[in-house]
Length: 159
Picture (cartoon, rainbow, N blue to C red):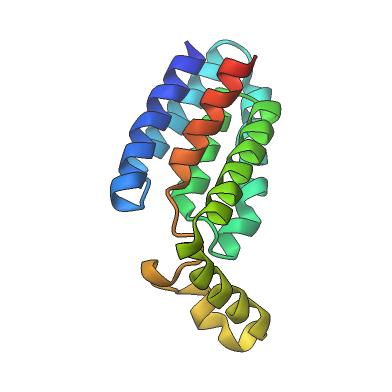
């Protein structure tokens, strides 16, 4: 049941992220809360809390550097509520590898990436550009939920 819920949520989130480049809160918050309640009911709350906390810590850096949106962070945390730290860590690594592969194979994103790296290297004097870039100026304006879904499918079919 847990994998069916996670895959369904990831499909809906991937669709929203692909169309709007945003994972809405109406997806992430209910899934997170129901996942924690379910894990409490089946007596796996410790694993779920580790999954949520681990997802938060894994995505803290990418969110702070604007490589990932907070909706993506909340989505991974919601997945963590339905799984565990081990699954979240593996999903995160696979999805990041898929994102990097996409960036390497998509030369159109290279100029945006180069520009954002220049801003990052400029240091704190460019903090407004770092923290408040527009969607068109974000280095990794990618629908992360799509890559998270692909990583989930990869893990499911490879095991």
